[in-house]
Image (cartoon, rainbow, N blue to C red):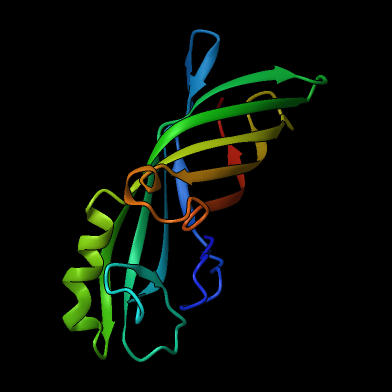
Length: 175
């Protein structure tokens, strides 16, 4: 996740775990999924209306569980007998659930949650993936997606702020 502010933590790497389904739909696929990660957040010291990533050792922060839900539509093309290339596009929602507070994080919890739930949870996902069909019904997939924070169109913040890149690896069973 990118952080364009000089203040706060550098752009954090958010390890995540997730699951999804793949459903054939005409000539494409719907692939709804859910991914869970976590990160520390703080109110900006320069602008109290801005929330930014915090380092784990920051004294006044809130640990949030991020639940990313997306609904991609995908098209897939066969490159070779066992290799497919695909692209996807999707609206995505990033829901945040508070887990733990430190220091002033307890008194800032409602401001931090208000920041995100004030419309700052809508993303547009675009990406691509490569499938290795190692058996008749099973595949290994590697993917790269970008999540664009469309809410910056109405909140005036830099568009790159909170943009996410997701590199994924997974298995598809019983396709």
